[in-house]
Amino acid sequence: MASTVHLQKLIHHNRERLVIRFGYDNQISGEIRNIPDRKFSRSLKAWHVPYSQTNLKVVLRLLEKHKAEINYHPDFGDGNNNIQVVKELLQNGLAPAGEAILLKAEAFKNWMQSKRYSNSTISAYTDALVIFLRYHADKTLNDINNQDLIDFNNRYILANKFSSSYQNQVVNAVKLFFGTVENRKLDLELVHRPRREHRLPNVLSKEEVKAILDAPGNIKHKAMLSLIYSCGLRCGELLALKPEHIDSKRGLVVIKQSKGKKDRIVPLSEKILELLRHYWKAYLPKHYLFEGQNKGEMYDNRSLQNVLKSAIAKTAINKPVMLHWLRHSYATHLLEAGTDLRYIQEILGHSRSTTTEIYTHVSNKTIQRIISPFDSL
Image (cartoon, rainbow, N blue to C red):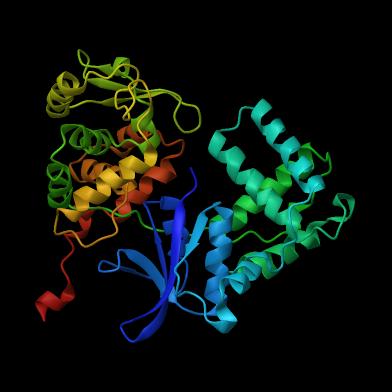
């Protein structure tokens, strides 16, 4: 389900800011973090960035990419900045998606579905291809070459300050489309890919995790957040769990067809098992372990995000915590407790050990042993 985003222009701390208010959405939040001088306001309960025509275009194109529904505050426009101008800014540099583009995108989508790509990859690649083809709507597919992709990177992605991960996503989508649907390979060796960003995972202390897990008064909410942390689960993995995936006798949770279509098992602690038993008696789920308001239906992703948001509001934590932080914290706390990195890799379901090794950079296991030369002055 697409996010609903509310845009407002106001004076905040004596500066003109563009306020971007929406429910919990990891992808949109992640991209807003790439905008210079972006801040999250606890009082406004929203992200805000310096108000400018450039930032307005960046935000609107970001929201278009994620198919967000945009609501404008009544006092948003004035003369040169009315809603109609804003909508025109959104389309600046991009032609409408005509029938030919949509047909090609549908053919690409069908090919990926037949190869059993994940739904998230299909959606991301299709959207990226449509944006690219709209940008070059004045050219036929036979005329599109490497230089057009380079031009798109420079004039659209870099000019709008989109993330390097999105740039790579577009390159991958265009490469796959031309190599399959069009049966014509582009020489991507000539296309500059962005240097890979190395960002450290966000990690909470054990005290902060405990405060979050103790906050919910509802046992279902408490069980969901606790299971994410205690087993290092991704959000989708938790929501897809069924009662039969909890192996209480062996003390395991079976994760079915997770990222990369892989099954794996993770250890289940006695403490979380006891909590799940209390939850089970209270709710008696039928199909999924955690169900929505209607019996047998999967719990909604956005509702789970709101569960975390409500829990954070009851604590003294002043950080933009996301569900994935619990998984990061679980891995880091395991490492600090002396668990072998190889076991952590298996538990988290990482294909490569290098992915798991990033937690060594945020673990305080060895860093705290380093004595600063300042102490000996």
